[in-house]
Image (cartoon, rainbow, N blue to C red; front, side):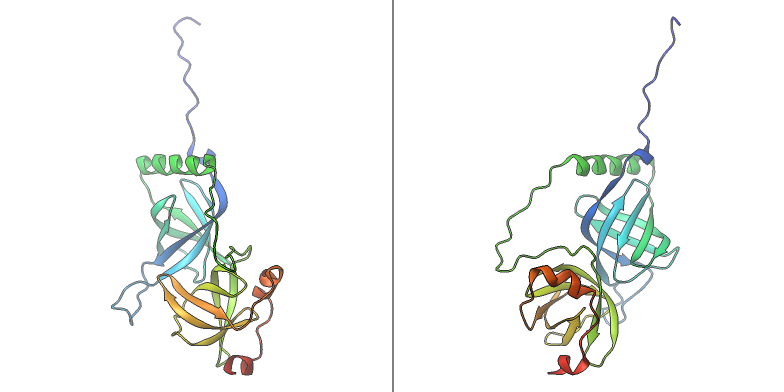
Length: 218
């Protein structure tokens, strides 16, 4: 038909989604740490998927439905969000953006999907890996068990994020692996294991039952 205008199909935000493991951090903005000048604690997390409207995280401290969360990821920047749904290992977030902000986030997601990931060689004696299932359990010397998030792990140690920050030298176990806290991190703490574990056993040991408490006190 003469004079008819055929418009291109608009790109829908629902069509843009990235699914993949990316480490980041978050704060539960309505909770305050009374021991740190009233600042909100910062926890590590892993992004499982993201669209311009929602994100799914694995996290050590699970936010309550409706709770405000500020999440940061290197490729996507700071996101102001709210917990839409709690999950056994984390939560689903609704992302608070205007239309222009959603367009910009959609562009970042498309870039992340198209970008070829380049890896810097890990020159450590025991390279770190991102565990397939990053949620584990901390066991303290008094027998207390706490959920934790394993940021990364190697045969000799791990970086941990949890609702507690044990002091340097504190004995504990991550899953079934015994160690001691060796330093604080911006989003958690580092643990050095008391022995070198086999690479192919790390994932299994993260989900294994904790050791007996006397082992931690030794």
